[in-house]
Image (cartoon, rainbow, N blue to C red; front, side, top):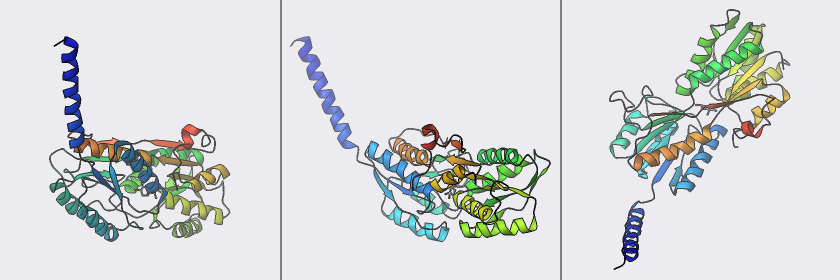
Length: 324
Ligand code: T6T
């Protein structure tokens, strides 16, 4: 037998072996459970997960509740577990209440990754703690985002006057961290007074009414940090209704199209865009890597893009505007 023939036969066996391995790997099923389905942030996250699922031949399940509510998310989680996915990506709306159910799923062999939110203390795979069983936490550095907001709002108001945080409700890991970072960073500005946080339950009209009430109590109100999409909508509506556009300055977290329009009109000074598409995309990629036996970083930070009237039309920036 010639050397060439031997080589061809070996190559033939190798490609047969490769084909056998490739056939042996089943298509994995990965489920994504958002915080709520009616939020452009999670719609964008879903898009990232869908694109990765298509790219890597994964079956993606997407199931969520219409409100930010643990009593609605719990049955969704149970229904998803009953479908026996290989991995669950979840933006858990509560840090503790879903953890035992997620742990039981992990003990059945389902990989758990948390997106946008964390369980336990948010540091996984260190051998102790309630959330230790989870594979990875993929999110923004929310505390740092709160600090970005504080420095920019301070600058916008000339480093003096009263400000407050408009937020969803206490106990949400992402928005709690933004508030903490903002309030701590504002300590650098002795002439800025941080008033009590106003919680709106993701209800923009409640947020708008709160702005009117705060302004009535504190006429020196100079700025608001809208710590998520609905909080920023409420702050913007409130400032407009009070006729204080350009006088009460707004820094918004999140970048739906409506906030981009408000940036362009000057109603909002800055939007701190998260990268939810990447959370969804890397969620699927991370789960797949873990299912194939690779190690996955316990924490993956997805970064921010800071949007202003001046840069928001640049495609490098506008690519991070959320999908609707
Ligand atoms: O800001 C996002 C998300 O990061 C947060 O956890 C909850 O609110 C949003 O979904 C925006 O509405």
